Image 1 (tube, rainbow, N blue to C red):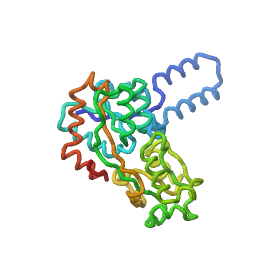
Image 2: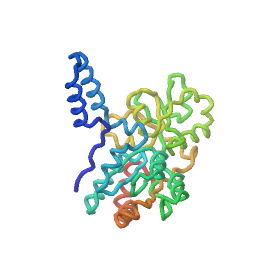
Image 3: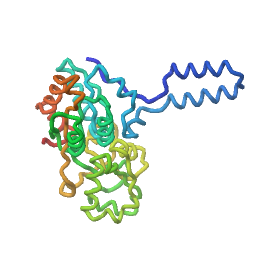
Image 4: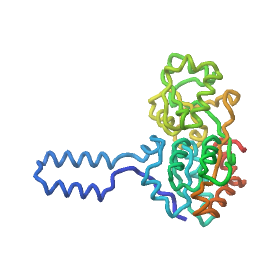
Length: 295
């Protein structure tokens, strides 16, 4: 089976060469030529994580997916799907191309014609929106229940729960946007339920998705982030400290899957095979390993 290729948004090297060749034919100084090379190299060095932080799948990423079953997946699934992909491809003739972004952004792209076959959302709201927009012939099904945690790479005591966010030594708190990211909605609901939101509102830093929240925490741009538990389990290096957010403080996070019209039309059998796999004992065991609960 072929493995999923890393996606990068860097400038195409051939195009860069053409630009250099064009400018070399012009009368420019050596200093100007060196400056041009620096600009091109900086563009080429843009990390793949930039797409993840933007919360939106790039056009090159979508175009590269043609020969495989294209799975549009919520950002919180990055770690668990890496293992699910290996397990699925080991036992099936179909290869996967997985594209990560916030659920809201992926929904917008599907509505605007992105050729995704299957959509794994971080809630049921966005798949149901696709049903309403007549972008799918079937109804979404809950494949897993998500869990919310507080996470920090700093020396903090999180054992008091969300009330610890009131401490003066915690100055910046990252949560995902509640507009596009279901875990952002859950975080906001939990903060309000715990009656701390109005007191810490000025500390909040918003990310486009939980992936961007994770980047903020890992880089120590913030003191604490509210994110999905799978990031802690999926990281192999020292992952700092974390504490579960009381599930009574936020609405259950039902994560839904739906097959798009594009998937049904072009790869209907493969789509159904993958959907069925996600409910198999082996897949559900992997979900549980990464902190998800059974539906």
